[in-house]
Image (cartoon, rainbow, N blue to C red):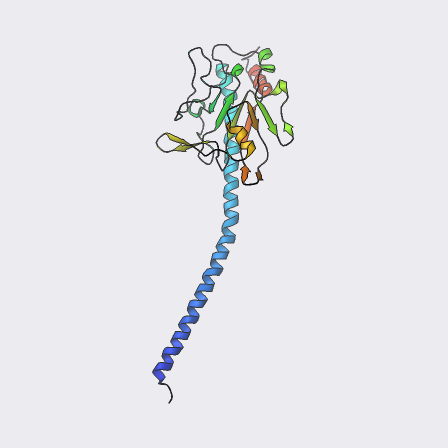
Length: 242
């Protein structure tokens, strides 16, 4: 017995429907793959832009520190408040409340954070930050004990150790302080890479290397140094040092 034409039409429609759904599924898979291919370079480009923004902010911070020294004859103290308020913390004897903390961005008129929203770490040698005992050329030449290591070992010799460093904890932010709306802040997790640990341990040694990845750990910190020779030269030219 032959099947009714009506039933055959239903079968054809069902087959066509199934074929269309299969086509749609394949199209969605292809579209997803294409979007993934397109998004990958966009994500890389966005990440590079953030590093470039951070490098620019570090450079501006370096110049602002020189400008501050030229005006006041000393570098600002770190901001050691919790949460930070953007202003230096000075003791009653006119020395810094702490040699390491955060860059006092409001005092310097700077953007508060790097491109990922974390405050800049800042350390300055006490020779250059005392507000009452201004440093001289002879005192500044060999004063600093801050050491910076690079890919091939120490990048500075004893006479040219930096007067100060400003540091971004990079994209992963480990060891840094995250800015939170409402003037609050919270500490990021501790670093896992040995060089990032060095940059977050509060001592006089820092690391400035190319971005690298070890087993289960990434180093992506960015650092700028303030050379005492550059600082002295700028202050002599501005007639702030004899």
